Image (cartoon, chains in turn purple, brown):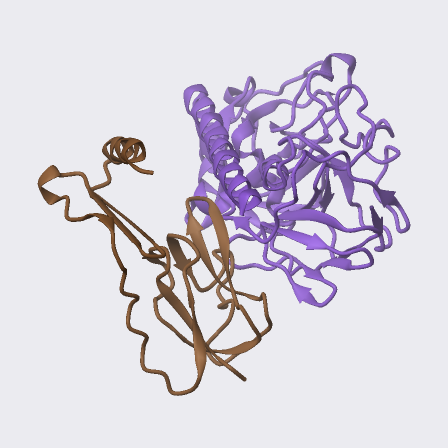
Length: 329
Length: 137
């Protein structure tokens, strides 16, 4: 249904992640911005967790080999269908032979780094251990367990019955659920087991200063640069289970935030954990940009997850109403 | 319609705390006020269409396809979708109506030049509100 035209672009097939597989030592994978992936799917009448293409490098181009309905979410990347500009967070309709081009992400009110291309019916790749996400470490899942290459052909799965509805969109959650400190994108963090092993000054600086996302940042983890964190006691730890969001501090004192392709165990001390409800904000923060961290509590973290789910439920409800109304007319 | 639906509508207005509902259709005007004393008119009657603005050249006015907040630019972008004076193709999105998280398109019914706007970006509009004037090229 679509053919990848771009040469190697690090794009991967992802869904909401391979949850429940950590016990076998299999990492989570899944979309770095799960909210964008879920919203794109809901726009098309798909299950929120259908597989889509995550695009981190631009320009990115595909050709539709047959007619198809698609949604673009995530970064606003000046998309075009042949020569016709497309709005971000929008449902489009392509004719066979048309090329869809995603350009460089634009700044604007929300600086984001990843775009999601969802197809009506979802990307049809086999589910492995309950997920269609690409597991790059293990070379399985997604499309042949690897990043997409020029010439790859991906098909859409069976769509729900009824005529496709296109030509409408969403206000992205970055605008509906903004979170910034002093104009810098922020994420809420729960202090973790070794938090108190760091000096008071270091802990205060962690919350008060900006952290730069270095070029050594990818789906595995984000290496941050800022005032080095100093431990007051040296910690020797055995490897233990970790999850996406965990902030590890290697001996140099520059933290690493584990992201979706993180390995399931590690031995560095843990300063904190970016809460699940804010991982999409970090997943979209571009390399070279600054972020801030906000100390939070368990209750606030759970409330934030509820708020995220409420936004998705609202999208589901309103999109459903609109799609049914359009189907009738 | 009507009586069952009216009771249902009126209950919905109560629940939502909405004071006045106005529905217009071809030859139909329905006004439902929540305060019983304020119920102004219920029935079918001819509806006068709003008087068009004086026009300098032949063209047409694009009206709101639904109620919503009129946006002249996408919320992620600062440049207008179709600035006054630009040429637009048939079917082009010349504005948006925001309903909650949804963005619905306001489209050009034919190729034209955007001649003027009736409402500012961010204005809450009702169904049929004149939004954009288009002039033939």
